[in-house]
Image (cartoon, rainbow over all chains, first blue to last red; front, side, top):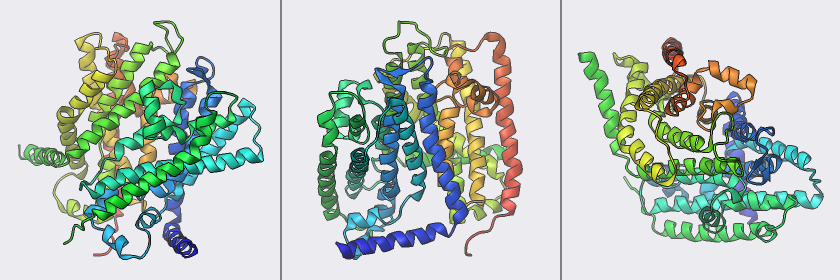
Length: 265
Length: 269
């Protein structure tokens, strides 16, 4: 375990060196990432201007912003490693880079996930955190030590759920060779997780809770901070859902690896 | 004539390349369905509890739902990957091959994009439209003239989008990685073109700026033509504005291309 941590620590250090060798580019990407986060947020701000439109089907503007900020935090953690899953089928399977991964005496999934990082997502993490704190002030939420602990646990859980879903989708690439894979539409499905789930119809609510559990990325855990009833159970299920997701993702991944055939030359 | 056949072959090649990626269609259609679905439910929730015919920033709920659906169907036609492709060419060094060819690089990229868009209109936008029409309510335009204006305006929007993408693609000559910039552009254009919400929802100071800037040609203007919301006496000036921006941006791309190409240094070799 310690040994593995040391190795992935070295992976990270190595990545940091290459990334920092082009400082201006890193800075430009960081600003771009903040812009990406801000534009998504601006949609909500323009939509619910607080004058003509003050609520989204019973959810106040501040609550919607709070959930949105929460989602940005989980998603930023997710995208800091998920960058390797993006285009997995093309890079690892079709171009055959997975051979290299298998040759090393380390867990294959961990190698793929930690091969490179998307540090730019710190930008949207900060925007998300700022949005959440701003909304919390309007809502009069006081944040104690326990709440900070919950935010930490649940946003990591949220990120783990997202990573697990995309690991499952990526492992499909072991069975069907395709450059793009089946993941792209699911990146759009993530945006459902940024809003109060009750605005969607029952079928979508069920799917987002129990099939592709994106409602646990931000919405359910965020209700911990609201003065509302009805979501307590689901809210605190978040870490458990994350755990189950990991197990499912692991099973799919192992099955995929067992079917892997190198493209060869 | 030979010029037409040269650029015609770029269109044809793009067309054939697209045929090769079939899986992309199914996932692509699902992508657009999810795009529309999330905004469909958001607008439903925004209008929840409001009386029928209630207007927010000038739009009723049925108008808004049509706006969103038609907006995304049109987007499946007008988007292009010129910036991404230019980045690849610079990154891989293949750009040097294109510099040797006796063709105008910008025209080639844009004609390729035209080829892809023509392909998509039949094989992608149509099925996307059919699926969206099955799932969500879309009202027809008030008259066929409105539809023609929408089509013309979308074509100009395509050209505007392609010119902007070309300009963004030029940044690949200056930065090591433009992925972040392309993502930011993608999000900024979705917002400021009026695809996500009509520009009349923006705060006044920003709305005034967006009325002047070219992004509205991409979604807001065409969609208002579709809904019959452009007063007849303004049609001429609105279209003229779209024309001017599209060709102005093309010209800017042409000028900046010569600059960027002259400072190109290729890796290795």
